[in-house]
Length: 115
Ligand SMILES: [Zn+2]
Image 1 (tube, helix red, strand yellow):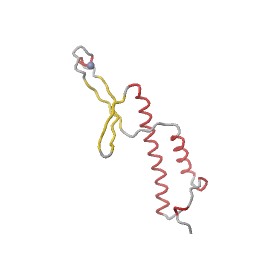
Image 2 (cartoon, helix red, strand yellow):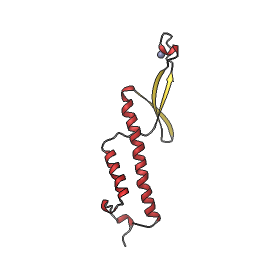
Image 3 (cartoon, rainbow, N blue to C red):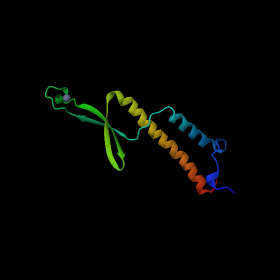
Image 4 (cartoon, rainbow, N blue to C red):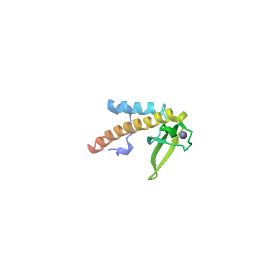
C-alpha cells in the first residue's frame, strides 16, 4: 500500500463539499486583495484652535492593527485606500474560514485513517 504522502490529490475523488470550498478559494485567490488585521477608528483633535475639532467634531482616522512577529503594529489607512483595505481585510477573513473548512476535512481523514 502506498504511503499517504504519495497519493496525489484528485479533485474528482474529493467530496462535493470540499470541492465547493476549494472552488471558492481559487475564485477568491484570483479576485481579491488579502490583508490580515483589525480595523480601528480613532478620533483626535489636531490642536488648532480655529478647527472644527476644537468645537467637538474630532478628526476621524482609520488604522489597521495586526500582530507581526509577535508584536502589535499599526498603519494609518488613507481615505482613498479605505474601501480597498476593508475589502482586503474581509477577503482575508473569508479565505481563512475556507482554509479552516478544508483543514477540518483533512483532519477527519487523518483521524479515520481514510485516504
Ligand atoms: Zn482639527
